Length: 152
Image (cartoon, rainbow, N blue to C red; front, side, top):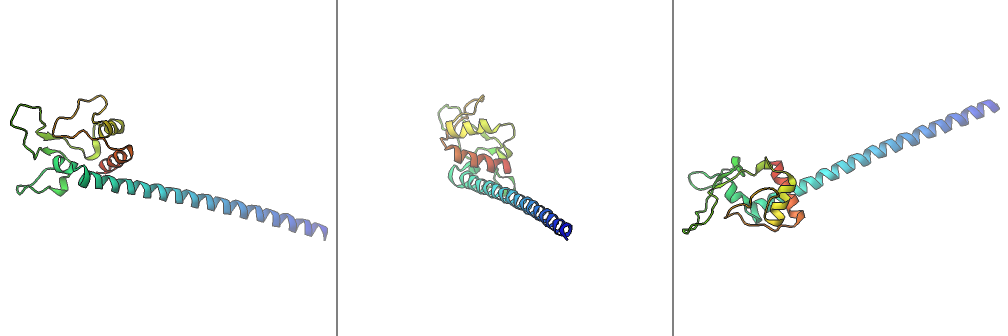
């Protein structure tokens, strides 16, 4: 009888340990999944904020997107570079007649774009020519713009 109780107690203890380990592992996986979902939601929110800034605040889409014959932005080619829709001044001044593609930010590091959007110049590159404004965005806004443009 004593052996039976000891075996029963040992089995119960082992079962309890297995249950605790299983629950801990499940909770850990759940927490990991929750963290991943939260990170994805933050990223999606940052991309959406960047899209708003690019299209409605900084208006990047206006110069960096080609237009059809009626002057409408070609949606399928947004931010892929385009001839400048704004004429240069009549006096002699350096003026960009072609806006470069900025979708996916090919050829730029995040640090270069961050510097361009927060200080007006990209590290290791010449200052953009007019009519490109010298932005002074916050790092948070610039980060959102970068996230959006990289997602294009």
